[in-house]
Image (tube, rainbow, N blue to C red; front, top):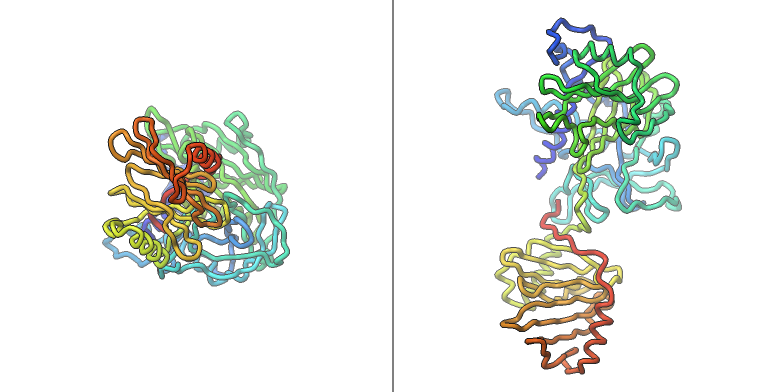
Length: 494
């Protein structure tokens, strides 16, 4: 798991490989070439400047749930052997690890959370969240829902009385250290709104022409995404596909100086170019969240979104070249539902309760689970399942774990607010039904009956027979409102 997420981070770096300064002279390659000179084609992967605490991004839900989510492993990557065919990943992996390690060592110095480019809230470091209750590292490289924890650095408001609206889905805000601001000043900027290529605000023709000559490609479109102070422009240039190569540029202009960073996309004849899923062949600029004027020029903090991924980092100018240094690459769990971990010590208690309720369950591996607050009392119940064979059990876990009901491939459960409906075939033309009502995470009572060929012999509530009228009233009241959340099952603590 941890190795795969490291590769995810590195893959983002590879996506943005290559760098070219705007002042490099045009080479003498054939006019059909899409190659740039060897110096420009190399990715700029500066070592992290230890003395500079670069801004980072913090994932905010509320004052008790805000953290810098780790994007790579906790330990430094091991240097591969010289004959390792995959050794090219190492330099970039080491760079992003160094940034994360620097944040860990200086976590207490980060004290401002910018919620807009003009407004910040003072925050303070609480702790590193790294080892989970199972004694294993929390997951890295993913942005989860509020109830699924990740490895990272936890923060809270410096003023406990600070009022700030909670975020249901999570927001990435910029986290900045005062030490960084001692040598930088905030660079105000104006964003140009964009909805489609019809709203492109192109760079001047001279800028586009120079970039066309430098890359030996023809521009398809350009867009100035942000005007920074009264000096810089930030935006993108997208070239027409040439020799089956799709190239777009991240661009900063400073007067007559033009700095660019090439981003190669994928290309399939008949389908077209693509840089992100569902981009419809359009290279979209990064979202600039903050901009600073540093000792060596502008330093921009960016987020680059895609439907199920998100890359954060910095764009700046070094040695006459534009650098786009990815900091973190995250997978975004858009279909995660209501996810919560199930720790081993808790699962042991729940499985024990199920096996005591029905010894047959000793033969099953209940390896999937979903949490849901059935009776809306503020405490979740849990539904444990096995899919081979398909069996399960719903438990109250408030206090001593108690089995509310079991399910299988024939008798499944539907959830209502304050009730569980179990129904399914029980042999021949017969249908079995049970309705369990709940309050305060405990079972109140249940109604049971079996219907064969449209006839019900008896209705039983709490072990006592009741009339059909009483049964129908009970059923109508119990099943008045379906639950507004369907359980999403998980089989991993990520």
